[in-house]
Length: 257
Image (cartoon, rainbow, N blue to C red; front, side, top):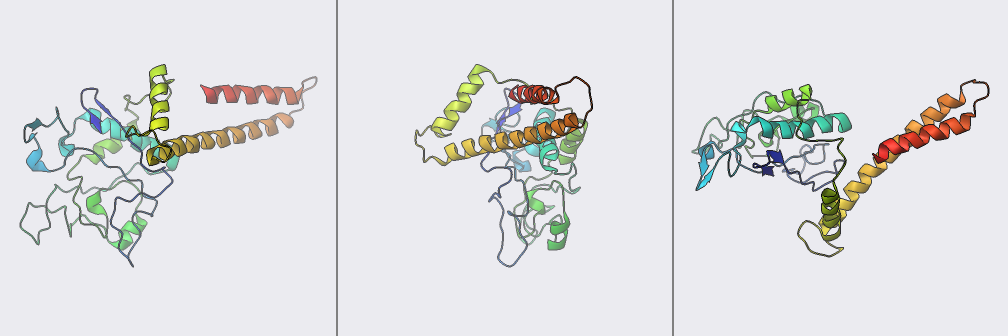
């Protein structure tokens, strides 16, 4: 969800990164789409070129984003997530080259080139199964959608590769207001319903616990590696167990920060 005034993207996570999503068509007897290790992003706005400058009384760039002409700050925000997924989940920093303008299947009256239906950009089953990187809905086999049109995803990849996406501050400590907002999200859910059965409560908590568990496992592995190396040292007069414990404490403090 673009926050145009703040020049930021407000990300909302519906599934854990390691769970399959449900945004794609997946025909029986065909190739897997949703469950083929595909991380799916829905960008709020439009890719319809008829709404390039206005959409009713709304103005592009002020009230909504037309993604094929999105400003660099918005592409940089997408690049932040793309780079994070590369670092943490090994999604390559590459993308398909053909991002066709949003349009209908040429078998029906409409706009060309056709990103909808039997699009020239749509992958065959074999190409999809061999593909690694970033593509759009218009590229998926078994699907007929044409989004995100001619979005400049090559620019997103370039920003992600260059690391020039300063708008997301990964290493900054949370403020008290942000901590309270996260707590409210976990307790009440995104729709404000104070019910433990609200699925958004489960998603928020499970995502947080999942990330915490991964960080804890990484810390444990680091501590074990350090202890093994310390135990192998032959240093006269040094309490190696005490030294290993001190290193473990320092690693734990770094994680807490």
